[in-house]
Image 1 (cartoon, rainbow, N blue to C red):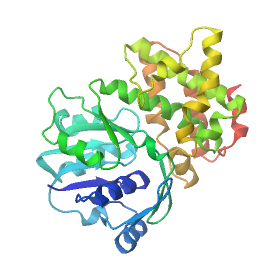
Image 2 (image 1 turned 30 degrees about the vertical axis):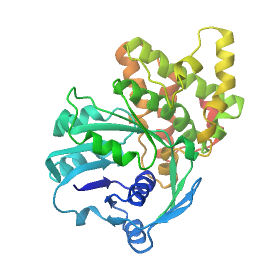
Image 3 (image 1 turned 45 degrees about the horizontal axis):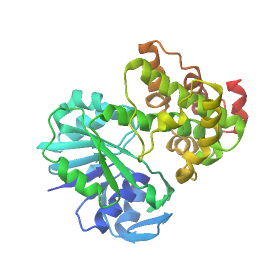
Image 4 (image 1 turned 180 degrees about the horizontal axis):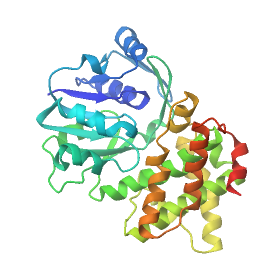
Length: 334
């Protein structure tokens, strides 16, 4: 069986290192030649909340050949149409593509390769690439978990193997309500990742000051409200019912939600949003697939999302060079 991680950046390198350390064969594929060369010659250096070095197999997309049974997709969504179309030629006849992307990518991918060949996975941990070959795990080791599911009513024959591979790093929850699980991750990304990118800070730094926490709380509330309007049941995250903890309909519950936000994110307080990492590198972000996805669904179900709309606008302005990630951007929410 051949298994690959396509788009092995910070998350993919760390996952690939864990799987390789567990004795399974996996190939790490990335367009960054310097990163690939460092992985080939020095191994994957994992730092942060864990520390280890692991030899891995790595190469660039141009060096791909043959067919794969399982491909973990960890690229950004902006180029899904061409990336998935290309990967289709490298999938075995019964091969499966497992997307680890943010937002709600499974439907678009299913249109290209068929829903029975698509699985989705959300991760409850974060990472940052420090330099070529060196990736920092920024989440607590006890927060290393995955939620795995499918939009197809028929379970792919490689499902158990995918689960086994992921378990070499952390706990895997099988989600029957996978769309609800997707929205759990989208809620976190829209609120904490969105504000991390807008403010130029970590999740914990966005959650601590009252002024920015107020916006985080409003973003969370909008995600909950659009799901209610659309009949979507948001799944718990690592056993915690985030709707029960963070939703509110009166002043007392709102105060409790506001108080608990920094506590709820403490295991991931050091995480810096991948959108912020993109902005720092002068790259376009996935904001349209994150906060933009909340706004789009809100329009569909008739639920206003002014805070998510504002995050999209601010991040696009940063992309255009009109603004910089900064706490000064809080004024645009007033």
